[in-house]
Image (tube, rainbow, N blue to C red; front, side):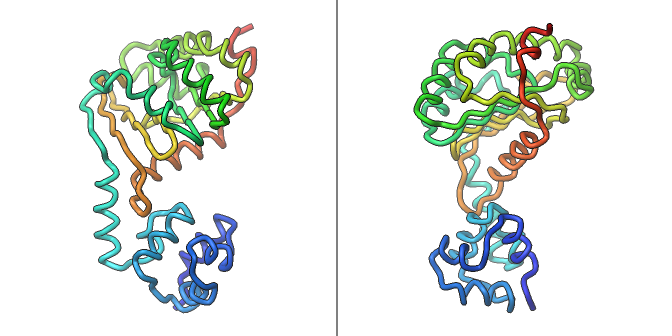
Length: 252
């Protein structure tokens, strides 16, 4: 039977049988059999296909061995688990960005501890000059999700934290237009900091500030799936967010 999930994943990525075949270095006829006849490829090709299509390998094939292996790979993506954000090594955030060669993504409500770090700002400036794509996503201080999060954390000042962070980011926004800033109005379940295939995911827990919540240090492995799950939430939030304007920095 045809593999409709594989066909749908190809369409979603805008790829064809031929372009996937070129990407993973197999013949187009081989890929065609996977799609139209439901043939199950070797596991190395399963992982290569999933990586090219940016989906979890278990979404494409229900092979029990593949599912077990994918679960093991996801566990292997976890480099470290910190019980609280405040015990994460203070230099790790900056060191991750220093290692980046392609992209840096920051998804937060306020992220005030980064917005108050001049060395972190210097790193972003240098990376933007070297061609690294940098995107900063912060909460819209006037939206319901931000107000609700402030209540959940027990302080009711999340909007003020964001406005304070925006003031700190304004020189960077003005002098480095290649660094993209957007404001989102989504409910965040994690704050995410990505540098290429490395990530810190800070969970949000009801009743405590994010600095007290756990942090996962992840490194992406093809076929793992855990890293990509968090990364996809960044992409979805970015698409629904609006660009920051001068008004957002001044409030005028």
